Length: 531
Image 1 (cartoon, rainbow, N blue to C red):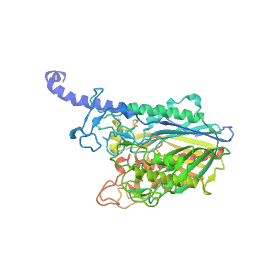
Image 2 (tube, helix red, strand yellow; image 1 turned 90 degrees about the horizontal axis):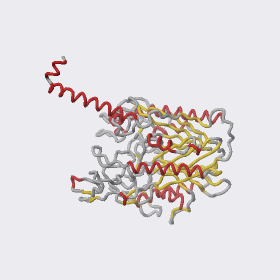
Image 3 (cartoon, rainbow, N blue to C red; image 1 turned 45 degrees about the vertical axis):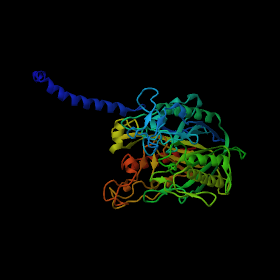
Image 4 (cartoon, helix red, strand yellow; image 1 turned 60 degrees about the horizontal axis):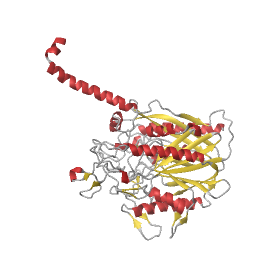
């Protein structure tokens, strides 16, 4: 046989090339699927069994950093057809200052993948709020970002100074669609990627700084809790049947103990920050900017409110389904104007309307001071099934490094801060799973009874509850399995399938996530019982 291959070198070469190519692809996939922190795991229940640390005053501190990129440091380009997209085939050109053959610019996340930013409308922030009590130090971070993968958050955790004594940090992205790409999905072209690793590095460092400062700022605080419906009419639409929303604005206010001086307000609400639409070329935190500003500084007359002061931190809620204001008519507070088309005026009206609701409810007799101050945290690394195009992209390392033979690693947290209970979701949860209302349409792909029951919020025990999405990860949409629908006939629209499944890890991801959330809530409640 050896002599055959020796005599037929051409045939041997032709056979060897595809085999070597297959081997190279396999080795590349194996390398990319490892991820930077393959052995990382978290498994926490704090305070730990046997802890004798007393429950005293709740200590709270906040800090923030500006993470707006300096556009003057990026290359300029010409937009031949003035459509806001970089398309050389349409005659667009750029100044290749460093000679790398790529347009080095700030690629905006959300919508299409070739939107270079042309300006800055408002600052982008990374914000941290630290809590300390009964021997536990815990930090919550919210970032003006479309989403950030788990390995990046792991990297941030590992950069934190151990001497700060932080037991756990929970991260969340606001899911703004007008900010720099932090996931590598929207940076020009999948076949000619131009991801800005320098921006992500700056974001990491600024977040580490904010976390450290927040912990250093802690002081005794009182907590006040309140919630108020924000829409859905005039605030948010559900673009997919069934119509289920996460439209209750959940608010927690922290004051310097014994005073009315505000340290911070934390709000959770479920809606995509995408008011500006796909044609916007200005970096902005969207309605989140106006909400924060209104809560802190107030909203002008007519029908405005005086601000609460302190720092407002917005945490994204359950926005799967999907929750959007793109097709919502938003009224101005003056009762005369209304906005339907994408614009900054619409984003301002939406954010200020939310701020007015939040300030008013926190100043009303509906606001209740937390009777307890205890602090407890449960956190668990979990593995969710992944299939379809999402799995292929993961194997190739194009999205979410860390592929574990048909599963992906992520994390869930359950937190108790006084009378406030929080559950984290590593992506965009359909509100049916969190709030109830999962259906089993006959034309769905499985036609099975609802799997993700009971609804998660039903099992949460806090006087006020928050379900925070895009937390510690961004794994796309979590679609109820009984509503999964990619094959005709389609359940809710006989002409086409629905948006969501194409950006999901598959039909088995939600049942597994639901099960893990039930388990982490049980662990949190068990910790509280022994405190």
